[in-house]
Image 1: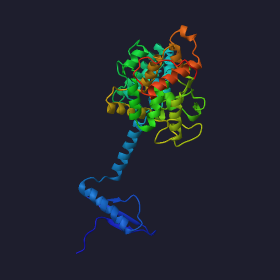
Image 2 (image 1 turned 90 degrees about the horizontal axis):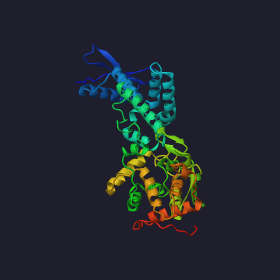
Image 3 (image 1 turned 60 degrees about the vertical axis):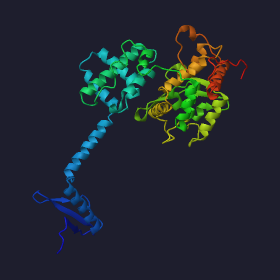
Length: 404
């Protein structure tokens, strides 16, 4: 007795084959394969898959699949919708509600503070930890009023995004930046900045992935900001003169990544390097896959032409701290570490440390004092010797008075 096969296969004049079947309980509705087949076997295989899907209840009509594909694409676009696109629409609607003066202030705040950082960042991917770091380390340092206005505008836009169902919750938490709070107070919402003991710094450098070891030591000894270190290129390092030129910094990842100048004018500087740090950098650079003056010193392990990911660095540091059983540390804490160790060098002024770290001076008096290159080099050499020799017994680092 012949076995009744599911569906029908027909040979076309072109020599290819067409397959179709009648959908059960549909009034003989015919479902045709969306493409033709080279031979009968391929056509029968397609029919077998359709029959199996019908039997186990997973079969979907072409209309269902098209609707699901359309919905998936709509969701993908929504998930990738940049903050800047939504913010521009928000500002446009506010034109009908607010005075021209207020709108000019809003647009200036958006253009100067929000758009550079968040404009290309998917609004659904902005998390509280990202906002906290932005507030603590990047948002208008030293300008309290500008910080508050920019943050309040950002929070208002995100509040409306919650109301519109664009995001589930506002990443700008209520206490992230209290009205009138100083930069130090806002940073404390993240965690109190701390200087790592030397043994913790060296242990952490050994615990993070090997391609990050030199990065951690460089920030902990020289005090570079994370954005300055990520943007370092081979042309910025002079291994002969033992110096690093800091003229650029990068913030963010992916589409939200922005390369610009350091966060303050004082951040543009030339930093001396110790002999030990030069050798570490030399070995690190020689191990990288790309050469050339524009090659990144600390590239992504996935793509040497891209910056090492900001979030990747933070996650690796956090995990290393957990494995070591030490308190959480952030890249910014490495600057505190460098400053703390340098501050214990006998016979130097705060101005000397500020010059190395690229900080703006806190008062007019310090603006008219000067730090010379020889003193800065002595500081760096002293800090490097303390860290790289792991000699943490002394609370005071003696400044080597002999010219290097």
